[in-house]
Image 1 (cartoon, one colour):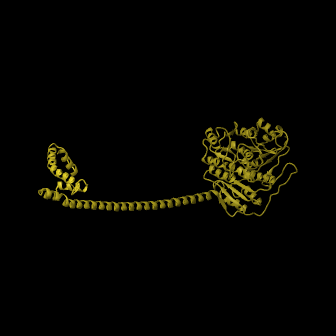
Image 2 (cartoon, rainbow, N blue to C red):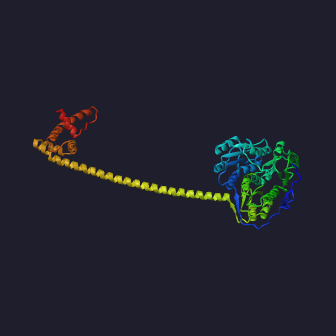
Image 3 (tube, rainbow, N blue to C red):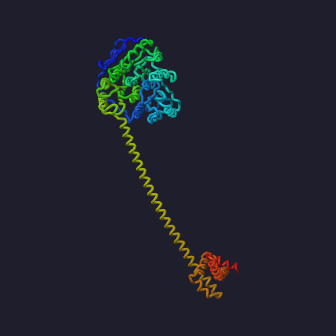
Length: 512
């Protein structure tokens, strides 16, 4: 490839000069319209990543691209691969899969995963856990260096994943810092344009130059000479074939971010959304690249209300439906957020994290109220059950009393009947047979009298019956014998025998 001239996009001039025809893209100044400005933020970078993915992919995704949230180098070239696979970029800590990453992989119902970086970046244990979640062996893409990793993403994307990369252009960015590669990540995602990281000291390896040569009509170089030195440009001019080069840059990362916005706007004038992230750290913008690329937006770096990207927003707010602010106030401060909202005519900023917290708080309050109500219902039910139990116990006590009273009455009736029967039967027997002395004996409350009455009550002795009279006679005769036996047993230390009237009478009868 012969690189005749590199176009320069500057925020000072407010225009981008392309190589052929010196085409000029004017800045658009239009009246701001009302736009939803949404802040996606969490307590940690992984919480923020989770919010971003939920906004990006509310449904499911076959693939997930997993990258380190602790170190940026390997992940810088991941956005175009994610675009080719229509996948979000899931960030995790290296040694263990972050809970937020696991939650998102599960929610997305992903069945395939691509791991960016070697075992020092994402451990085998982490990959094993991901394997368990997706149900298939994850594909790890890595190289010995960050530059080699970016090359392998391109090569293995084609060989192992069947990626059809863009033939229009490739993107060249420094691997020493993250800002430029992340600013162009949404464009790379949408266009499936691979990112090749350049070493500012040594340039490209021969293998990388062979991969670039002949496969793209031109290269987009992101960043000034401090980021991508002339050495790399020379390599592209003489080490590859075909196409022309284009350099987009500014005085600093924020100027470069605006310059890229101009370039991308020129390639796709219908910008429906915008994504703002801090340029001071990488995780939010790294996770946000696919969100911007999928929603026809661009990643704009901003750190102050007068950042070049905020001014760009004022000039290109027409037709923008939604604006995302990535990260909390420590990432995109309130003043910058208000400036962005003002640029797009937004009346207020919707803080998804705050809304989520309020919803969670309301849900917890509702759960607590339901639990309290349930507890009250249970307490009421228990009180009713206790009252029913006590009433049942009272009813049982009444019934027991009634039964006992009836039993006592029955026994009294039986005793009265026995007395009456004795008067009619036993007394007559003794009077008939001349045992008048016994009348006083059995009229007393003696043991013998009670034995007789028991025998009558149990029906063992029937008054006015000759057989019963016979038994009664022998019972009376046996009483002295029983008393003598008990006296002997008492002397021997034995228990006293207590025979019923019937047993006494029968024993005497047997003795006879």
